[in-house]
Image 1 (cartoon, one colour):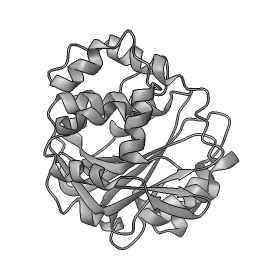
Image 2 (cartoon, one colour):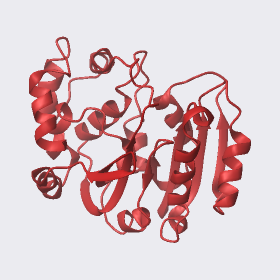
Image 3 (cartoon, one colour):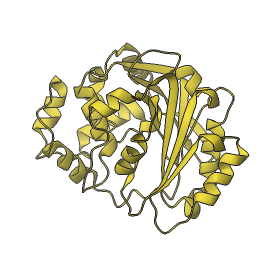
Length: 278
C-alpha cells in the first residue's frame, strides 16, 4: 500500500507549445521550485508534454539538471493531445506525496511557497494571487476578498466566488491528494476550458477544509501566447454541470439551477469580478 508523505508535495506541470513560446517562462518556474525553502518539500515534479509536434524532453531535462532537480523529475510524453485537465489527471495518477500542486508552464511561485503552505493545516491551502505582466507585479485580490478568504474555513464558504473567478488557476493552491482522488480529479470535458472550475466546484460540494495563507505568493503570468481564444467557457461549464448530480451546498445549487441558461460573461459576473479580483 502506498504511504502518503505528510509534508511533501508532488508538482504536476502540463506543457503545450513549450519551445515555441514558453522557454524562459519554464526556466523561471523551475528556478522557483529549486529554492532552498521549496526543494526539500518536493517529492516529484511530473512534467507532461501534451504537444505531439514538439520534442521537449532534452530541454526539460537540461533545465532540471541546471537547477539540481533532475533526481525529482518524471517526464511523460502524451501520444495524443489530451488537454490540460486530462494531462493533470494522468500526472496525478503517478503521485506519491500527500499534497498535489498543479501549476502551468508559464507561472511561478515565491521562494518559500511550499515551506509556508505546508506548515499549515487544511485540505486546500490557498496562496495570494499576484499578476505578472511585462515585468510588473501587482496583487490581484481586493482587501475585502482577502477578508473573505481569511474568514473561510471550508471551500464551500467561498462558493459565491464561483461566478466571479470561474477559471481560478490550481497553481494558486496546494491540495490534499486524498481530496483530489475522492472527487475524481479534473472533469474530462469535450468542450475545454472549465476543468479548473469543475474541480473547485466538486471540492466545494464535498466541504473541503480551507485556509488562506497570504504570505505565500503565486505569480500568474499574462502574455501574448496563452492560447485561450479558442475556448468556449460557457459551453464547457454547461457540459460539466449537465453531467453533475444535484449539489449539496446551497449556493452551488443556485449555479446548478441555472445550468441550461448559464452564461459567464454577464454584467453581474463582470461586476462581481471587478469587485473582488481587479
